[in-house]
Length: 490
Image (cartoon, rainbow, N blue to C red; front, side, top):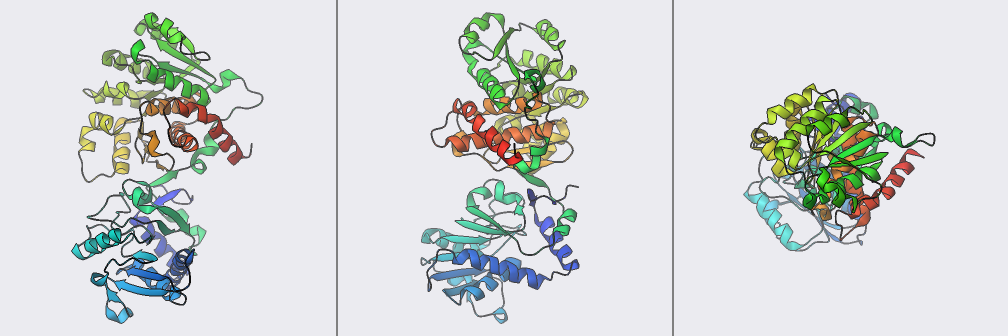
């Protein structure tokens, strides 16, 4: 079982309940936690508001409602506060029923209906309140997670509040990063409420946020005494010349990503065309399995990318099998993944038997083709599905999207926290494959290579900003490396 000792840990409802129980055992009462949580909510809510501002507070029946009512009590000293309660008896304080929320614009609405424990769709009363709130245009501060979002899966349960800010406590929730919940959270504020540090080493976590703290100490970095061969030699298979742009993108990303050397491996009749497009990247002919076998005799070629623009499914299956049998790291992407759609067990068998590891980087369609039964199971979240696929395949899975999930066969998983909508453009996945291969070539462990590559890819996009196309990403990697260098103090 993975534990949540690190601040990158993400919680589900089990983790939250366990943390509360352990805090109580450590002498921190629920009443104290509610008081602290309410105070933190009130502090955030008051930011930027003038005295006398109108605040509507939604209070539900559970802990979220208790936090909301405490915040309302504190805010009422400076602001005009109205509490709308749902599922709470009148004896718990003066309030109006949620049904009476008219949707009249307020300076702020504090959403404390439901938190991490919600599993069922919102009923008609709550759905109507959410609709009126959306129409009002009032800014919303949600407590813990926007009401209507499943904190375990990120799914919308019937309807969901869309917050401008969300205050959560001690650790983030899975649904803060998984789509579509990620779109409802707004600015996320993680507040401390006095749960002792020792509690977290006993709290289970299903996944971590993919951030440098998770993998930076395992990432290989160039040393002043090193040379290019210390940083590995990545190989990218190129397909037909007319589709070679994808492989060239992956190769450029591998070189900028940190590999010491990069070779494009293409058919000999395409080498002249490829040579006109690359400079620091080397070229080598490969017309079939014999040529690849010769190359694999040289152990310096240690990380391979197969799939971007490759095309030939039969050759893709043969080449992937040879690379894995030779014990070399492999990033299988795009056409390389689709090539095994009709016989996935062949890939999985070689993956589990290989002395090196494989990283699969499917988008949603490729995931469905390679793992049809897992993709068809409606009970699985994206995280659940990636973890199941990793276990079945023996590979590290990078399930791509706005909420990219990285999962390893040993149960570790991470949800990425970087990126922009501008990454949804042709070729960016090819760049990602190259960045991951660069980390593998340098000797970084496989899960950490995948996590670092995904984070670097998303961060490069953030640094470039609007108007991004795939060719821009490798050019931004020096700035990403500089940021990582600053984080590690060198």
